[in-house]
Length: 154
Image 1 (cartoon, helix red, strand yellow):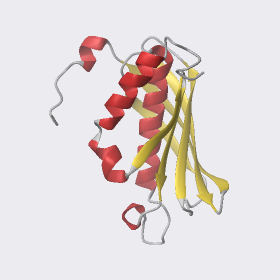
Image 2: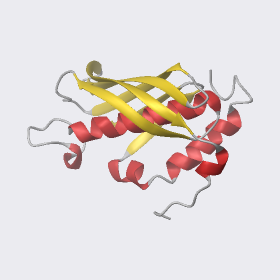
Image 3: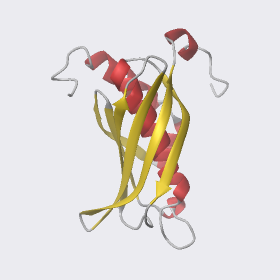
Image 4: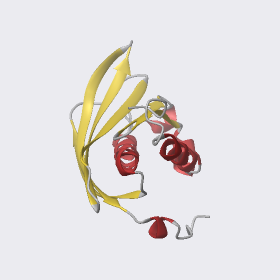
C-alpha cells in the first residue's frame, strides 16, 4: 500500500526518504530508492565500472549492500520505527550481469523487537530480469530514543 492510499504511511515514507537522502553510501554507489510501501522496499543501481569486479559482473558487495539497505528500510516501513540490520543470510544464485541491479525486499514477519525480511536481487539485461541473489534478514527494531543517538559520521 502506497503513501497515497495509506495516509498514516505518508509521514513514515517522508522520514525514510529523508534518511535515505542523508546516506552518503547510497550516493557513492549511485543507488536509488525506486519503490516504497508499507512492508516493502525496492532499491536499484545502474551499472558503472566502479561497481564491477574483475570479470565485469556487479560486485557481490554491491548486492550485499542493496540487501542490507532494502531489508532494513522495508522493516522500518512496516512498523514506522527505526531499524538496524542484526544479520542476514545471502545466497548468490548467478553472476550479476546486466545494465541494472534491482533489490526487492518484503517483510515476512513484523516484530516489536525483531522483524524478518526477505529480499531478492535481479539483474536487468535488455529489459529481462534474471534472479541473481536471495536473502533472509533479521532486522532489529529500535526505539525512537536509540535512533536519536548522534552519529559519529555527522
